[in-house]
Length: 109
Image (cartoon, rainbow, N blue to C red; front, side, top):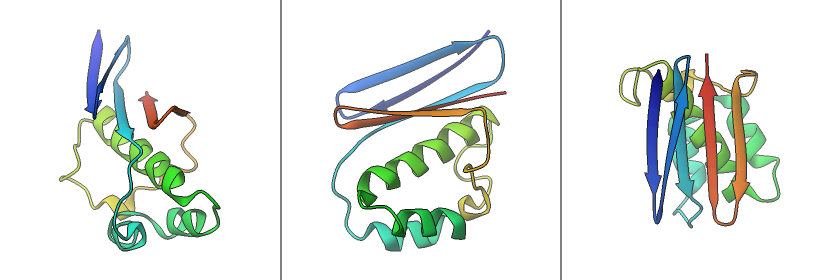
């Protein structure tokens, strides 16, 4: 049994699976200069998607939670790999939902 946990603001999310799994939840909140942050941590493809979206704050958190859930699934954490080298756009086993003021992503092997 594999488990993973994430928390943000007032919510805690747990996931249980028979394979490696990662989860991330983020409260959608204003961030100063998301494009500067994205330039540091997102791949070129992810930055282009962010620029092409009318609701860039929600898209920012979708990309971030996908990255974090994926790296947690791999048990790499955020510090072991250059985040801009990880593009989760074409990875099929990551599922993302937006609900109320939160974005949640789950990655499974």
